[in-house]
Image (tube, rainbow, N blue to C red; front, side):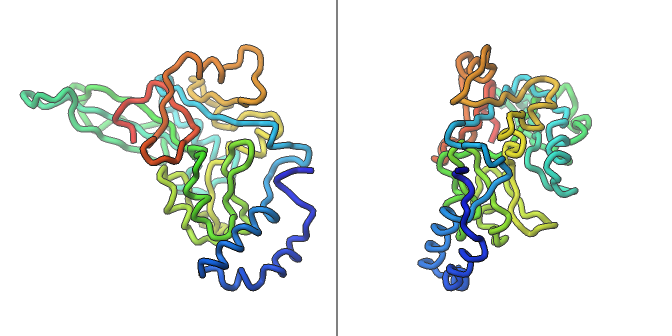
Length: 272
């Protein structure tokens, strides 16, 4: 049996939860609804034969290799049908660190961050004169696959959930568009779709990874800055294992206690 799907009738389950759904915004009924939906109603794009307990997906990023081409963001939009406009499941940020002012005693100057069009189609020339730039680099961003995801904790109906394989997913059939999860995510990785009025985010291209394919962003990266793999099923000369063994791993905002699982190497201290 697929652990993420059940044979229960959605209509029957919803009917039995009528009282709880009607009172969603009282604390006790919200908790009851969340528990019921989490156990009975969640569904995914995985095939019926996929067993999430036999996999542990992980995304790593070698920040020294990212060239800011934006192909990952473009591929993600096309592959996942992300709405046009300022909506992204993954995006690229550019960090420009200026030289310190003479006599300031500082080792670095001001840090400027921009992300025009999510980094799609690359970046324009910086507005800072080149002779004033100390260092510049690009940082890919996406859902951080938290071990303690705040988005899951605040969802009143259990529409967002952490799968046993490490993916954090959203069931659009039960999302009520309250945007609590969007507000709770400290990484800005969620948005409400203007088309469906439900929450969207990176799913690691779940429809691909559960069928043995790589996420679109990993597949298209020309610099191989994104490394993706399965911790429970390492392959020969596994690039994921090599990355983890040969780099000092960092995560974003570790002080928040979300325990993000997206790992970075060569991450500058200015990245937030």
